[in-house]
Length: 556
Image (cartoon, rainbow, N blue to C red; front, side, top):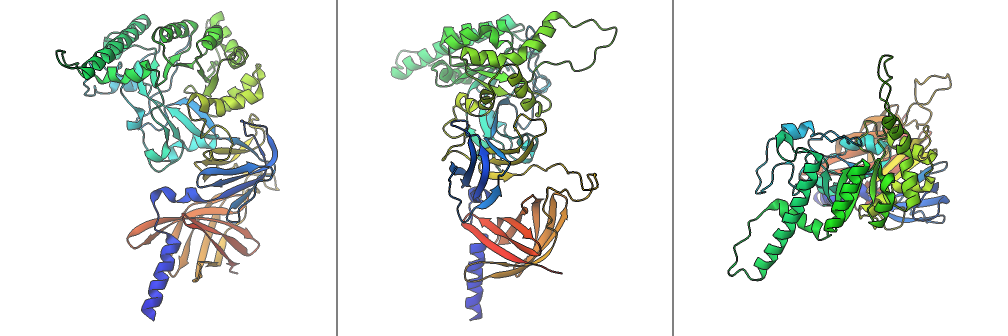
């Protein structure tokens, strides 16, 4: 009989720990955000509605959306929900990040330090390093959610990422800012080929901007000829010399065939004009990135259907001028005054555009400068669209991201206060349905200081005797919680041993943490969400097979 009970207990415990696949852990927790204002972007604003998130997707959204019984409820009263913000040009996630600098109009971009120090990589390309479009950022990405914390805390859930080295920067990828592996992060790869109007390091041709355009034009001509010869040889090789393999030219064929867009980093009017001429000559699906002076050629951008990934890294004086310093030129002053007007001018001309950070040092400047665009004539809803749905449309992911609609990926940002208000607070961020809660700043206490327990957080510290309601075999245990403001530590002790909690956070509603449980030689993650009311505790332990509730009482 003992043996039978042991097996029964083992089976129940296996049900509790769940024989899981790595894909199905905490992302399958179900959430319901209720009573919130919802900016769907693709439709009207819902003044008071509910969003249900299940299995990483938006299950339902609306004023009368039903709240499932197994959902963790987040009261959205006084909160606003937006689609997760998209930064449409970054180098986030690269194993060796490169400086994010954009050339000023009229200036040549210089090779980055990383490009100057990297060793030449073996390649069967017939072109020098810097003119090799075959590189794919996917091969350089590194996994890990911690690297994205600053951007997530600012409300960003998705980015376009690409290397910044060379004339050809290679092929980019669209990634979500969460995931334990690179494959989990990927939304789309490759997205586009990328070009920066710079020169090749080491004095190798091209050494001037005109030389760069000449080299690009010649490579496209070479790729056209390469494709023609390859087709001829594949059709009937007899009597024909075998074409030489070349990865660089092969990489340009999807661009020439309009199967892949090509993004040009260009800021000045003359750069953009030359890019548009090149795109028209070779019938390319071109996109402009940067675009400080794009407003000057808005009519051509519209007629050629070329969208702009518009940099919000607006020019500004970085330090007070010394009394003996020369006055800034009229061109510099004009650029600083005119650049924030560019989004409104592009909107008026009917040019498709999205916002990107442009290598800004402080990601919080993104929303501040978006607001500046609104102050300079851009429609407010268009500004929100430029960092959500318009970005998704240009990046070709609008069927899964960019707006709040049932069936789309649950990438959401929740704020207290208007999104463009400097005093707003990002309270929750969801990436692929996984919840991240930025640490809230401490609020003043009744005595007017910021010391002690912030009033925005629940009081959850203590020792609790709990019962985990495993079907047919309730599990008794002790939950020991130690709270230091928003940080929660402690352990869960039961017949299964003493398991420390990790990633513990205290919220306004209660707490959450994870536990790593070892069983049968395997390791499993259990996500715990709970509330404390007086001396009572309750909550759920969530797994891929569904949530298991628990409740208990605080010990004296």
